[in-house]
Image (tube, rainbow, N blue to C red; front, side):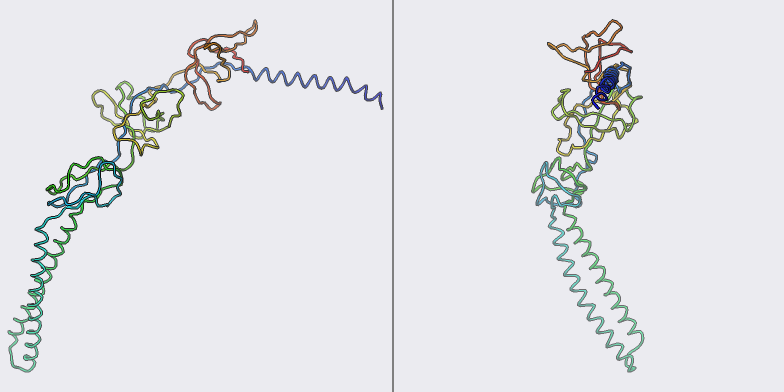
Length: 339
């Protein structure tokens, strides 16, 4: 039994050696990255301004005196909410007059119905003529229609008083309130301006980029405060509209970006938008080492390995993982060693 164990030892060593060679060979092969050009979006940095999809005034529907305003600049409102109330004293006087007229006509109408009832009773006994009954019937019908007309007029006045409430046309935020309490306003005059429907970014790019911009393009949005720091966490958006008309030599673009609800209308944000395609050389970030402020990559050549100083650029997300653009120092086909 001991002899068999001794005979197996060289075999076991040979197997271990072969496995080690296979492992080291695979590791060496995986540690080489062959530099190939990749195509990326050529981004242009521009400033976009926050705008609202809907900018609508809440207008007065009747003329009168502004007796109350329930909103101010920055207030949040919902569609149909009352933002102000306008009163017209003449409408109250008209309503009182119509009510009095309705009461008088109703009394006359009731009397006419009684007269018609008595006339029909006398006609059945042969004590009055048919012409008299027709006259009484006509009088009752006229008073009935007069009562209906007065009630309809009353409904119109009540509706006018109800329209003294100035309603918000949409859900959003109040941008401006140009009127003050006690002011006399006319029908159609703006009482408040409402920004609603959500917010978007409006961009203006030079005319030479117009042919490369289309709906659906992805844009990168910087953080608030006009910052262009490359290491910040940025948000993504997309182009939703490209206007067909150039303004002052610029193409106007709208981009939807989440999280703009608390921004100021007109606030500017730095945006990176693709305007063309370009070819770049990039390597995995772990291939770059930094010493004394200088970046290096290790390249495998026929004579061995050598370190080359490089100038890195932006980090690119690809389907194979993150890649760091190399602006200078390497060429197409170089074999970059990975740690």
